[in-house]
Length: 354
Image 1 (cartoon, rainbow, N blue to C red):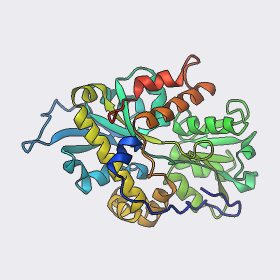
Image 2: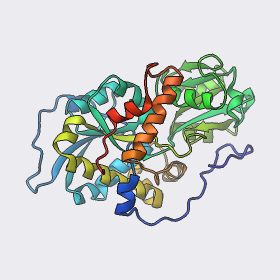
Image 3: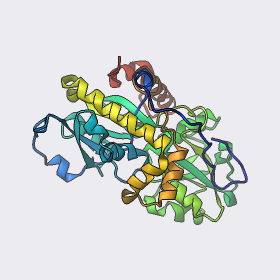
Image 4: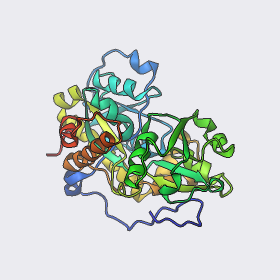
């Protein structure tokens, strides 16, 4: 993604036309996932039959119905991709914490879920029986700073500044702590982090209580768009050295993966196909997702184009990203000091395509 210091919002770089994902490309390392969402109805469910009368494998997939980046989960259902892969998928909107989501997956209240890896990785360290089986895209967290406060598109302009975010230990803090360190700034001593309810982030930066804000899209994109030119993009989770990393992942219950690897693989393949469509035809995807989003079709298209839905790793490619994240989070004090990235990835990533 190119950076123009005179632009308020960095425009997504145009992507060359690509053919539909081939089976060879998929098995070689496509990908999946995205952000989570469940609720009381899920927690109170009783065990259900595993197949429909027509033989489709029933799967409950937890997702966040407001997250544009997770639109592949909906697209795969609306366009019949799950069904063509032998699945009857029920989408469950999860509004609880990440720990609750992972517990729901690991205990079989949902067979799988999608969400941000930087929100999942620390809870996964605690030993939830959840296996990462794919990734859907990169790029759905953004940081913008106030020009009035001296912030530019150079991350070093954040030294000595205060960053507002909606979760003090969430994906935004984890993401930008690592990226700040990569740009020579100590995220624990040279930047202050301050939490606000999400709807108040814009007010906090207007009042000067913080000089930059970080959150997921479309929230940050819309705040930046509505800032009358004050907010400049500083970083996203596609900023170097993360320009080719996965952001959102598909996790499945360990029991589900062990008992029905074929169904788990078909779920991953379905989301990979839907993610590829997000890259190749974002306008069509935006129209499908529009009833769920607090954004216009045009804004949804912009967000989808700013993300890398053409990269959705599985297997060794996903393993590599997770190992790097684990080591980087260890180095900024998020993961345990004795974490070894490859060993961590060995435990949480399952290669269904080997």
